[in-house]
Length: 385
Image 1 (cartoon, one colour):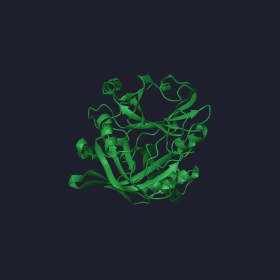
Image 2 (cartoon, one colour):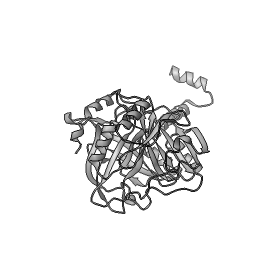
Image 3 (cartoon, rainbow, N blue to C red):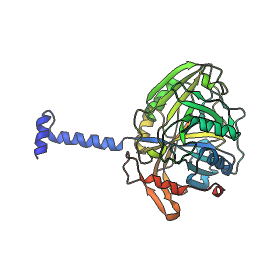
Image 4 (cartoon, rainbow, N blue to C red):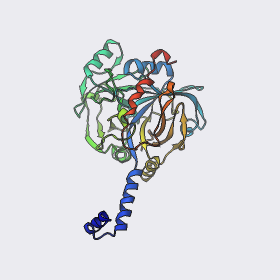
């Protein structure tokens, strides 16, 4: 009662019950607001699941298995020709920190490959960014291995040292100097650090990426021919280039695995190029989506709809994928690039001991320390088959 009297004296204009209600409403609102925890994974369509994962294992250190599941994709019908499509899908992670890769192989159908290389000005995910703690060591190692490194080490407009390379399937990766670490395993690279996305109109796209995805800090916005991009197809022409970061610190149960990240938007000044998945199915070779780990899917949905980007696929609140389950949904950015949201409910921590992590009763904003047990989910290269 003394506290109530004190509050009443301090805020005479509000009756105590109204003050209590206001506090409860704010608390409820805060608890139910969306949480964008980070980039959970970059989806990569491949023609050979085993070969691709082994390559990412060998060169990017993706040696932790979260999911490996063979089944039928039944909920992506708008993007798979209106019919369920068999597939094998796995999520692999590098515990140094960063987003994972969802490696996705369609099965039982012919794949539709891009007829020409991805170039600046095309619409869709142009490149996946990958963290490295030592850019020179990564560059020299990959050169000595004879990998498809297509640039020298350069500096981005924000001062980040980087180089570009391709995997054996033509997918473009941007290796970036980044000191973030979840578990220091003395690896040459970490996980995904973001993505470069081609858009037709940056001004139209900015509300989607800054408001819905929370990359609200514009750290660079300029139109030019960029020296560090001339190694790429289309890099000889001027483009508008916007680099986005998050002003909020990372938060959420799984956020320490994913760590920090940033997005880069590229707009051609001489007319947009091709849509990378036009007349192709989702799952065909290439970067198929960018996935964000979230909490409070209902709040994400409300905000997406308010911005004019309704969910286009929705698994429902109890979707199982292998040994994990959760709630996944998709939205399209203004050019149709697919962005996935996943609210994770359960993941295997030490599967062979029957240890799983139930996230439904965890703090939606507090990072979990127990995730370091995921080191026991490492797989040997020869077990990927």
